[in-house]
Length: 327
Image (cartoon, rainbow, N blue to C red; front, side, top):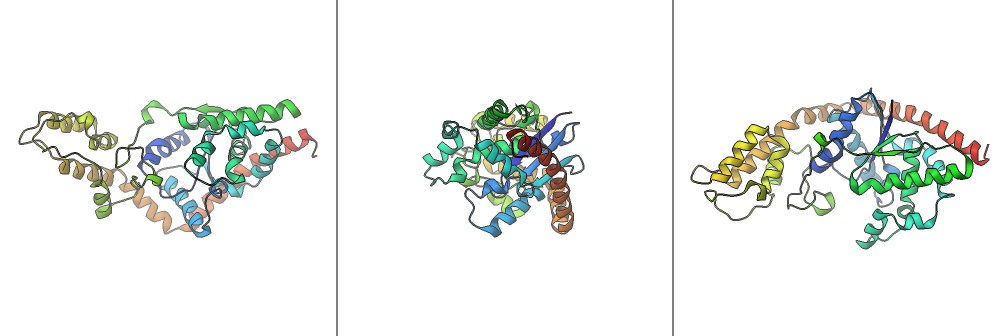
């Protein structure tokens, strides 16, 4: 049995890109025989967050999202990062064997500085805390996309440095690429990568008029409905592909290719997208409302997850302390 670990930063409402890019995979993995730990990275959020109330709300929203979208909290551990303070001490132990050059090469740090973000020490040492998150639970596998591969590689480097100095304490984690059938590239409403920071995202739990308004923002050209079009060049189909069955999707594509008086316009496609999203997430929206009405249940799940996760972190920290002479 393997231990799978992943973290989610509470940076705002989860959008379709978050769901198809990570959450759906995490929920599916929790149904396997592996031990899955998913933490809400509220410590990491402090590198940029300056609004305590907003952080508390966003942290809660991550928990609501995962549980509403089907995470089985009896099989997987869901917890707040800050409920396992041992990771901070492990991060210090790792920092003492980590070279500055490794941190200076971190892609995420360089990207944020290039975008004009004023760096702080927390942002610079972010990879050390992330490595501690991974190593604290004897994690075997870390689900990542290609753009996150460096995080796991840095955790491997730090574990190797500590083990070389003090003996075999930390287990080497390996990256886990998402299963092909669960992979889906989700564009933003403007055709670029969907991102909250770009303002082109669509909230997973949006519904009704607000959902229709958001879908109507998906960019289109000025071609008339009767003009034949290549579906591969119509952004709307990238959204339909996420939700429609193969036969219905092909029917829409064929009508657009043929053109003519019976061809659907962009407005028809947008209506179908909104209907599909509404129907797909309807059970999750209902579950989310139930959880909002029962906050004690969410608290219980997070506390239970933290208790079990912390027991693992305490054991790892004890090994590390003994190895380096603190005990």
